[in-house]
Image 1 (cartoon, rainbow, N blue to C red):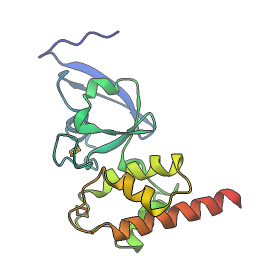
Image 2 (image 1 turned 90 degrees about the vertical axis):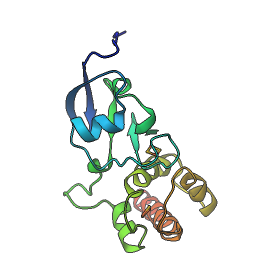
Image 3 (image 1 turned 60 degrees about the vertical axis):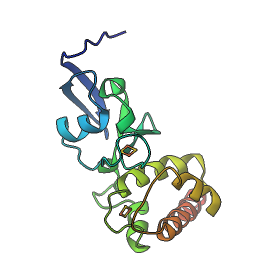
Length: 168
Ligand code: FES
Ligand code: FES
């Protein structure tokens, strides 16, 4: 196991949105800061910095994680996915992002990248969610603007259309 020394900079490497990336940081650096400051991946937002608001949510090895509660060195060798990696395969918005736009599921957008990442994992585990399940998942995210109604609509719509596509 790699040994980290407080105050010293260490190389940290992981796969970010399908590409090998590397940077240097002290062991105390948060993954959220590493993504934004070292790798320029500023789509991951930082709100509360203590695990409450969900704005910093990323996927680590396909599971949602608070980047503000994860040390960058803990991501060594992992697969990290952030909002920058979402697309429709041709460089455009993916179906979930398009549904958010259609249903006015964002206003300032500060919470959105974290919610989108949680949703991607949620819909993989729960392809047939009901409204209660969607709202439970969203309870891990604070949105100050939307009142959540548009977000819930967008997620339910995408769940239905992905189900349809998988049966086609
Ligand atoms: S910034 Fe990480 S949960 Fe709020
Ligand atoms: S859209 Fe502003 S906080 Fe959610």
